[in-house]
Length: 225
Length: 205
Image (cartoon, rainbow over all chains, first blue to last red; front, side, top):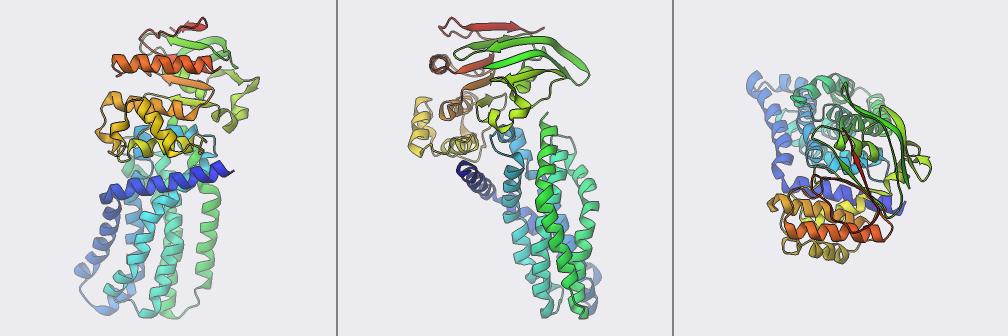
């Protein structure tokens, strides 16, 4: 048990170290997120009420696309250099190692998106009262995006054009998260009680945390076969 | 003890070999030979449990490896064609992570440092591994074996890219492992010069 905890801690720190040494990997999704969201005021014109109405959806779609952009680096490097093989042969449950990798991935892609979202909310003229809801919905939602994306990334590992295939596999699965995530922010602006939205997002997260690492592990074993 | 009973492997739709049976006892080395494409790597990956065999059974101390799962993995070290080295990490970090992942977390940095020194990588401790040459990367991959101390070593072309000195060092390491009651399964196009009576040879066609 102790060796398992140590191995997981080591793997988490390793993934963070590797990602930080390739800083472009971390910055690309973040800058992409900022640019995509910034394109809307430019394209639609700076009419404050229009921007406010579309803000929740635009920011959420931006976060969704930015997460997807980062998915292929989740396993691709480790697959190419053989580390993934060693992980599959480690005397630990592969699902837990996968969960560790997803956690490290989220720390450096999902979390920065959450942290920068208030800035984009200002740009989109979102009312102050909705800032907290936006950040909280992204905080609950982005881990689900990473967990779902991991399954897609694992299934398309080693395939040519895997990046495009991942989007086709994963984007339809993202729709419920988008609906309830963006819905909660829009709800707060209309003065509707958003408890149900958050309960559902929380339930999605709990389900995803329980099952998806194991599904990802199974997909990885197929890809390694 | 590792027993292989009536193993059959296919790759895609192509049958590679069938009716392969052998057993390996502590202190024995199995040298697998065969032409390119005959299925040596597939055999080794099957023995690790990475690839599923078409039919047949692999047993470790009398129990099927599928049933043993992680327990079998804790007995096994595999070095395949890929070295399992992350280029952005230093050799020290790479080996540390590999040791943790193989379940031997009790290894102190000094032990890992000593292993690197033995394999002639001491001077590269704090450089990113991507600057290492092919042969040096191979040595770093083989350092995993020394650090992990697992009973069963499965090695796919371990000597490829190594210079003469490294080959003889590797041979010494293999012999030490056998003397301590370890087991080795290896594919190599080179002769492996271990001075032990118990070298089995199989040639798959």
